[in-house]
Image (tube, rainbow over all chains, first blue to last red; front, side, top):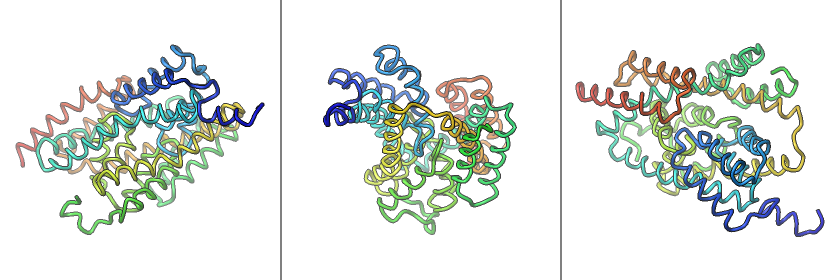
Length: 192
Length: 193
């Protein structure tokens, strides 16, 4: 922290100072991944890692993993981990590159698909599409829960937390924040 | 456009109401917004039925991009056109984005503390429980599915096996199970209109 200007430089362009060419590579890479990210941006993490860590060396593997953890831990959609990556690489300019790249192409497609589905909602094709995929949606949620819990299968406190969460969600009208808070306390105390 | 049967259903009054609702549910969504979105939009606000939510989620899930953002975009667009899509999306992302940036700046400067790592793990466990609860709450929406109860259940089980046990990537699951599901539903709908 030598001069007044430096924190602002870091905020805007990141610790190293991202240049126009780097900015463009970051933006282009995340834009290309946006349209193949079926299941969410998290499914393309390995490709993001390849550019940011292996190819360009902008972040260390540990810094990269921290970005993912921050995205998961903070409130809001998990896709915000791309904002953490963008900020670590190139400050607010980096955030603009990774967020716009990840969200704009898929957002345009989603709105277009949503309008098409609404216009032809009575048609056999659209009804068959949503009905045929509905069981997959339920199965996907169950599988996601199972995959997230697998590393914790040997920990009784984890099962207790899951059982408590299911009870709160299915049998009460309470806010899910209570369960999250209980999980955070149990984890901070080292029980899980 | 709301459909005729849903005349009595509550709906957001303005894009600003949409912004506030999505901001609220995003700020409650630690480790995943989807369970809170279902709780808020279906159970608390009543803007969507369980079946409508399941339908929107099915579409959002096969499209590229974050599911819950897609869901907000499509729902917002149906309410108020592109202004609604923008309101839902901005409501969901703006405030959490500021928090993520603050946390990233702190992590870059201070590194990590063990208790914080533990808290994150504990929240992750609860997040998994919330996702399971969402599946259980949405499952009764399959009762009216043209695949039939047994058929829909078979596809649920096959999807869980494919992803949790066989570890297939999602695009392969959509091809191998989604396409047959859609074809079977189309055939059943054609047989009994």
